[in-house]
Length: 146
Image 1 (cartoon, helix red, strand yellow):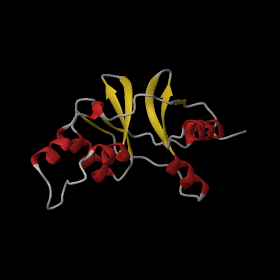
Image 2: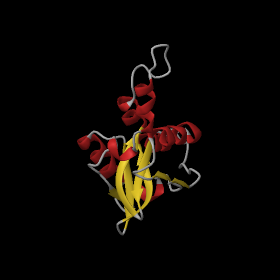
Image 3: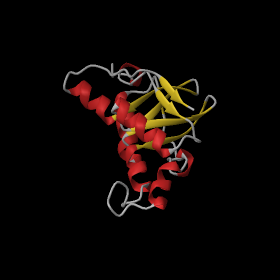
């Protein structure tokens, strides 16, 4: 029998609200050392923010001698302005091979994991690689940024 997503996903989630700033999200990425944040409004998953989304949104002059006030303002933008809204999700009972195929087809490196329509975890390419090399599953301290 094939392995299920539920056995490989990261269960403890750190999430962010759509109204959080990019600076808030960047701090979470640095603190927890991961690359994807599910964006939730109430109990609903509304997007995914990656560290690459933030990098694309930032001014190239940030933290340089040429930095200006408007460059700093990019960090005050809200998550909803740059998050991915086209969600590709997977169910906890799906086979890992199915999840991997979804990632390849949709060119994404993470899949929010749903159980009965509720967000319960996240599956990343890193989770899959960790399992392949024998590192077990990942758990992250649960947190939510308003």
